Amino acid sequence: MKQFQVNKKELSKYRVVQSEDLPLTQAGVAFEVERFAFTANNLTYFMMGDKLGYWQFFPPINSHSTKNNNEENWGVIPVWGIGKVTASSVEGVDIGSRYFGYFPPATHLHMDSVTFAQNNLIDTSAHRRPLPQGYNLYRPLECSGDQTQSHRENLQMLLWPLYITSYCLWDVIDQCNMPKPKQVIVLSASSKTSLGLAYALRKDDYHVVGVTSGKSQKFVEGLDVYHQVVCYNNLDDIASKASIVVDMSGNNKIKLRLKNRLGDDLMRYVQVGLTHWQDVSTVDGVENTKDASGVSDEFFFAPAHIQTRMAELGASVFHAKSGAFVKEAMLWTASWLSVKNQRSIDSLASDFESICNGLVPASEGLVYSPE
Image (tube, rainbow, N blue to C red; front, side):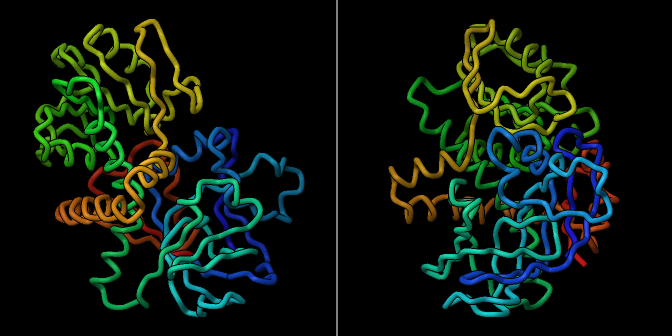
């Protein structure tokens, strides 16, 4: 078994650890990880690992060759992927069946306790029971088929976790009880979650402003989902009118400048991701915080919103609406996203520095097949 690990205190330190496969316990399921995606969204899992419990999902396997290191400092960043069942003592979970869900960036995953209901598998291991159920649920997939199916599954791994968040953010704005904003400003406009949100808002005739880096400006403009695209050093080009800001970047300096620019026209400031993790001096956590602008920063956590809306609408209604949007947005994305298939856990280690430094083009998605 191989597993990619990072130092929880210092992202620049990472390693691939190899260990013997763990034995399957009673009522358990063993997976061979077939493929997984790795995006900037996974860096948010790193930044919020302690605050939101991301380190608890997949305990790191021990390395027998690093006895002098502080093993408690090492953790596993969760990824979205596909696994094939190699051993099962659970009725209904057949060997060879395939599931989409939350996996470690590793060659294998062992679940000590599993519930199987309505064709879905739920990891009920003791260390995962307190965590959001949406992360513990695994959805069945067809047996591996042709190249078209493989490409569709790659898009699912890359985009479903991001576009379900885009849908939830659209829902938050659409359900806003205060007067509708004159504009919605989206920071880190080239991120997939931002693009999904802009795609949804544009269809509803919101005026959407995307804020991005100079190197991404042309690409973002070419997708035609923002009415206006502004670089970070040109925030004064944004009109001062009633605005909701959705911040995927987590860059505190940009946030302060934008709040000063908007002043009393700032209606809400929603903090979502941390794509600019290098520029985050502190992470406030999950609680809303208020600064000199007088407007609270709302920390948005998609699993909590999903649970709330399922309770309000009913699970079937929510899944039907969100699923329809995600499917449509994925079809749109397929026209411009290039999927790059990488081999082995070691390939992730080779690419990791580029991912952390934002050097992977926005038009590219990385999928890894562990070996």
